[in-house]
Image (cartoon, rainbow, N blue to C red; front, top):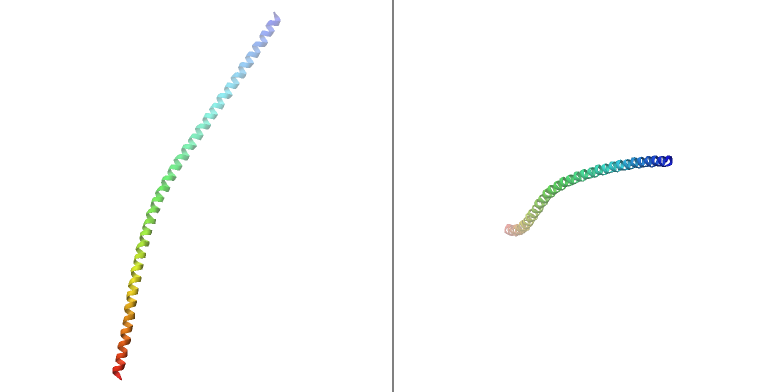
Length: 119
């Protein structure tokens, strides 16, 4: 009977030890789950923050792109207008140059006539 009692006490002690180990494992598991949950929450917050920052950056770049497109369109229009004015000025310059040449020719003819008349 003493042997059974001792064996019973040993088993009770082993059961208590196993219960304690089980509680320790459960506690560690729970702490690990909390840590995982906290980590997931932090990652979620970081992702949310990055998405928000990305959206702001995208909006700013879209706005800048629109402004730059407007500037580029104005510059293209200015370039077309400048090229048209250049063509017009070149045409007028050729016309004036032609008139000047004709005037020089007439002056030369008149000078020759005056010389002949003065002789």
